[in-house]
Image (cartoon, rainbow, N blue to C red; front, side):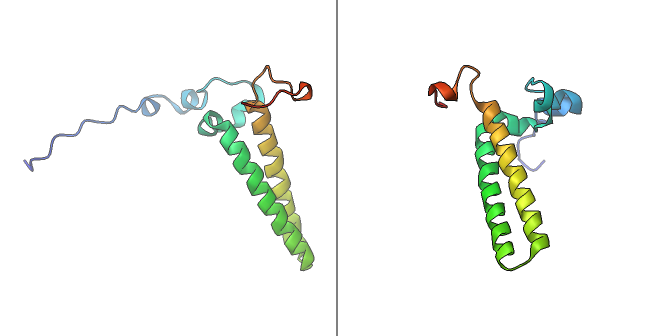
Amino acid sequence: MSGAPPTSPADDSAARKGLREWWASPPRSGMQRLINPWEYRHLRAFGVIRIVGGLIAATAGAICLAYAAYGWAAFFLAVGLLNLAGGRWYLTIARPSGANPAAGDVLP
């Protein structure tokens, strides 16, 4: 015996569940099931991160256009556009259901 206390196996509920139950938690419907559960739990933060990443990729695309690297520019602009769209989608889902931006409601 080495004197170290015996370790007990970790009580990880995700390990006991199958992949299907883990992916279904937290409950969500429709297209929202495509979002990774960990991202879904931190939706507003990941939405902002996606928007910042999209802006960086779009900037890289504009720089590539300035140097006439059209293939790279198309790649970075497409990645930037997809990230901006994904970030907006995340922030739209994260908005409380009662908030109406047209009426001047702001996100908490």
